[in-house]
Length: 256
View 1: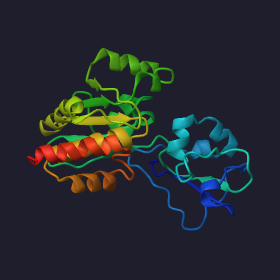
View 2: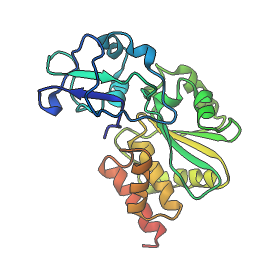
View 3: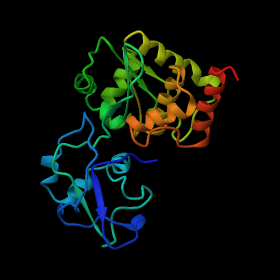
């Protein structure tokens, strides 16, 4: 699933076929309400330029995160069937970071790679943590970040305040392989650490981890799924293996 964003598409074509073709930023449709992360970026300066110029800067992951109102499998160029509005007030183009509240002295946050990889200290500062208290859990594979964020990759390789547990996109290892990771995250949060877990978009892999941690924190499966979705809309298991691993964890915690 794709995250909500601050981009709105409208036109006469069927929803799933709406394309972005406006030469410049258009007036927002009436009642359009952009989703805003507490750690979102100010895009005023970007939105003053032509829309195609803005979109040309986005790679595939950016497109999925910022144009998620449109069917994510649709190309956003080539057909004159609508227009797109990019909000001209502070919103998140990087997916933002969202706290998943837990009954613990520490905190769990989940986000996408574009929220943390360009400026890890900046994100840690914006969420009110410090380098000393913060621990990053990276769930992406190396090829997903190495070209665009080499400095972040070098920091991850240094293993200073991070756990790198690569998981293939749209999948999950079985519980035997991933349970220790979930337990480690919950242990850190209980002890007062601020854990920031991320995948590519902060939805499937990071959302599944967050559901697992909620289960370890004492919620049942449905409560955990709803809790994560409430605090980061759209986050949680996206495919069968991700759903299966949290179902198995819930059964094991319940003694079943």
